[in-house]
Length: 239
Image (tube, rainbow, N blue to C red):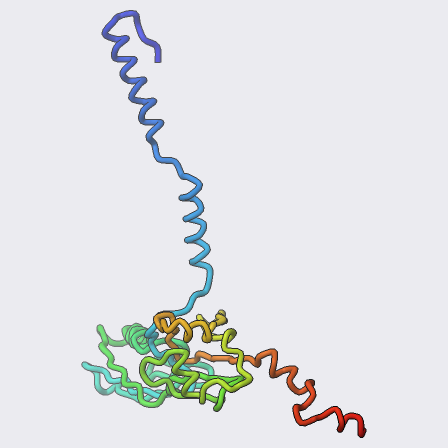
């Protein structure tokens, strides 16, 4: 911008240039910290994490349910999820519901029937389903599969399975949890430290399908290689 020699115009020009420079200095620019936070956020979105504490039940093959049509009772029907994850709907055909929650199934069925019914409203009554459970294996008193009744933590789950055996490695219990259809996440838990601290706020709550693996400690692995306490030097000499 060129300024005339007129004093007034010179003053206006200087003022405009000053404001432009100030605006350029104060314009927000992405800092390294902001870029790092954005990168971290993007990474978190792509990283599988444990699901919520109270997940909805997901339908699977063999589950049975009643479909009740509020305004069209002639379409009421009972369906069972086939081994391939589909259900057969009257006058509609097959619909894949495997891995969907009941509200998601309701929405999918209503959408399917909206092709032949005006604003269908459908109630779903889940009749037969696989009861929520978790599995404990390894060095516990009673390894096996246990029904998940109410709010159960890892420590409570191990107790239900008979507790640790003397050969258990308390500090490296592994919790395996399915995050989605493609991801399974394993987390190592130091139950020995958790119980010693007497702070059970970090005791993870189990979810349907969880598996707890209690490994064997190092001493018990080599115990069979050590000489028996009843094996004396005189017995060894006699051999």
